[in-house]
Image (cartoon, rainbow, N blue to C red):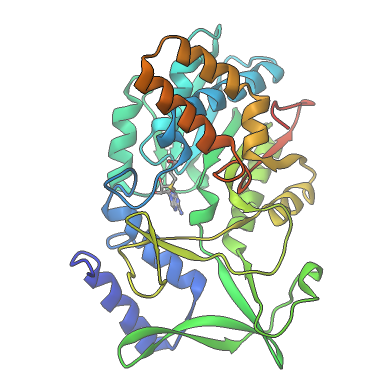
Length: 359
Ligand code: SAH
């Protein structure tokens, strides 16, 4: 069943294709997710059992609590500046930040020093974030341009990069071609268009039919953050699912009510996302002189930060049902058959010699 709300988005995309010809997947994804009026994230809260998917902070309070401890530790390593910007990219319902703030209440001077900033385009989610983090009067931004430039900066983002547009190439007999989206009898369909750009060395061994995904939007976002941190000093932490190194393979997926669905069948109603290339992120940052920490697997990172001890402590004060829920959440966040290996964590820093925890 296709939603009525997303109908406008589909007809808008189809008109663009009729007018301008097939479009690359990046342009398609940007509009499906982020169209100011009709985009997937603009219209709804996609999280939780009633939504389309669940994220780590929504699984357990432990996730945000440990990220909070990570931030407080970095702040102390930075010399505990009196005032700094803590910016979260794509905060969803604001759960991670709320848990992070609660867990760090007792860190001397930390709450007085931090200014909460959110990078978020969705009006629906901004509202939820405002409710979750009322006491800290967050400041929202549509882009990085409006972020204060006169303070040290700590940036965090969970499952943010994977929502930025990516493109796909396919190896053909004649070389690499770009996968595009066109129309076949008024239905969306995939096609191929000539591609004149270069491809990284890492995929030179790809065979005919192989897909390669790349995201200029992710790379330029990380470069912009890098520039900010270089100018203002500080650190960044990104957590997402993806690969340690640049490689061929297809990961673009559409998720609708917790199920994978064909990408072109629920356009506007399903979330679209793709693996983050952590190798490319690290290269983009280190190429500009940043220290890169990791990437490491999420399970290892959370264990380093003490998630098992935190779970044990929570269990002490719990009844049987709560105990089971905590154990289940711990498993889900850290084990390899769940999110523990698929999800990776990368840290970036510049300025003072920082050794962020967890790597
Ligand atoms: N971090 C949250 C939500 C992840 S979903 C969690 O872990 O639960 C992706 C988030 O990024 C949503 O809040 C979405 O509205 C936001 N987002 C997606 N694309 C964006 C963009 N280009 N600019 C700002 N926010 C964006």
